[in-house]
Image (cartoon, rainbow, N blue to C red):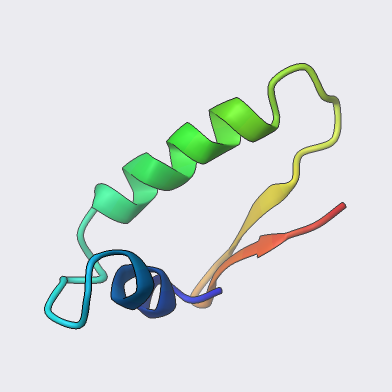
Length: 54
C-alpha cells in the first residue's frame, strides 16, 4: 500500500502524503498488531510504502 493511497483513503485528496503523520500512525498500528508476537506483520517497502506479511 503506498503512502498516497493511505493518505487519500484516510484523510482525503488534499493531505500531504509525505508528512510524518503517516509514519506515526503506522507505528501505532505496529505496536498494537505486533505486540506479543515474534513475527512482525507490517513491513516498510523503501520507495513504495507498506505491506502486510504473514
